[in-house]
Amino acid sequence: MKKDEETKEPLIGVTVKKKDAKKQDNKKASVVKDSLKGSIKGEKKNKSIANDDDDFEQIENQEKKKKCSIPEMKSFCRQEALQLRKCFKFMPAFHVYFLLINILIYHGELFLLVADIGFIWLNLYNHRTLYKLTCAIHIGLLAIITLISLSHFQRVIEEWDGGLFFFFVTQVYICYPLCALITAKRLKAHVI
Image 1: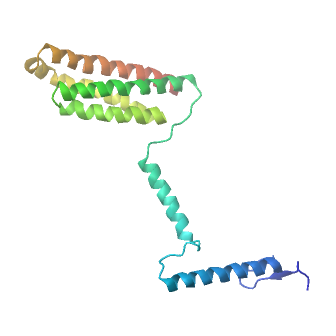
Image 2: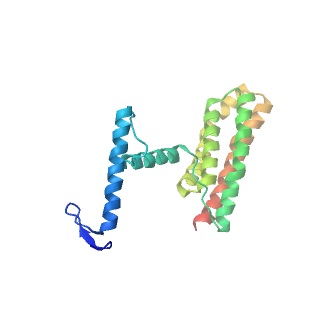
């Protein structure tokens, strides 16, 4: 017989060279030996045996890491997208400033505290991804916060002195609408 002679395996139905068939048989035998050694030693899992389920577990773990981690920075080359990204790059500084004012001066006004924490997260998320929907949600929330704060306006005048009134009006009626207008203008340029 020749070394390169072809044989047909009855179970698989694949034509292989005889030399390759012997290698496959040797590999199968070594895997069986290793698994027997591992079971005799009491090992739960032999690392030398490749299990198909392990591949699925690795993929699931990678997907979990992707869900929990910060989204990837998407690259854009259009100038409009870069301008929108720059807008989201600087806005978190304003919201951190407003968050500190909320804690130190307003003594934890819950409404503005939750809003600023949400805006910080939205700014960072939008900076990384530039999803049009979340950018629009950010603009809408800035407008809604401004409208809701109208209901607090009388209480602000009655309870707080001039300094607190100045910070409140500056934050809610000047900075939030200004951020919404700038972001909306740049988002429109990015979309069109």
